[in-house]
Image 1 (spheres, rainbow, N blue to C red):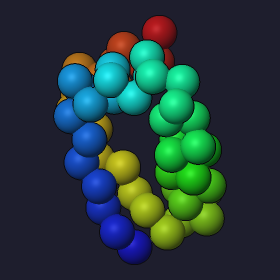
Image 2 (cartoon, helix red, strand yellow):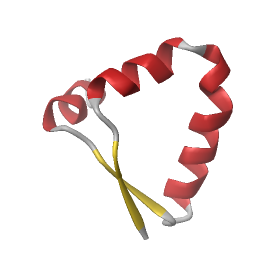
Image 3 (cartoon, rainbow, N blue to C red):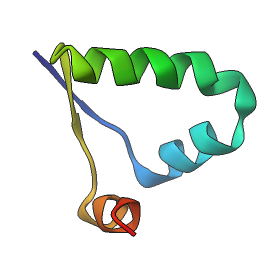
Length: 50
């Protein structure tokens, strides 16, 4: 399993660019298949839970 750290500013850039939807969908699939594990900054996780 690969572990990937994505910084908050990168998440924000990905979220606001509709052209990145394919990338995000692929990443979601890899996470669901347990091929990739995301390491997120603590502040990002707490914002995601809101």
